[in-house]
Image 1 (cartoon, rainbow, N blue to C red):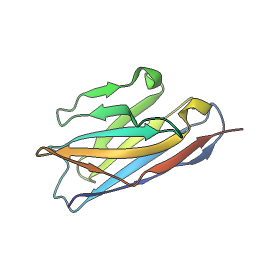
Image 2 (cartoon, one colour; image 1 turned 120 degrees about the horizontal axis):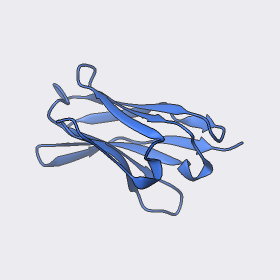
Image 3 (cartoon, helix red, strand yellow; image 1 turned 60 degrees about the horizontal axis):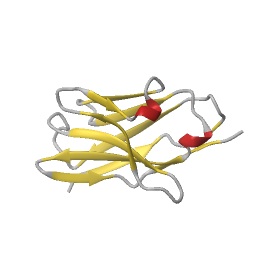
Length: 116
């Protein structure tokens, strides 16, 4: 069973930056996997933030284009989300997702709070 552990969340001021990390374990390599970051704000549905495939190609939600960057390190089995120009609407729990061999795995999430 693949395990995903997110880290890097916290409290940040508006216009600030954070880098989230997601480490995959119990897997030889994430090289062939598609990975993504989702987020869920209180009272809202979980939504896709960004995805990076094994190619790799990237997809971003419109609300983060130009501000967030997803990347991956297949040697370290780690996925990153660099977040810049954060605003209050970015406050949410951010989840890492890995898709491999028709199965989907989720991390436990990391809280990001944007507030002055």
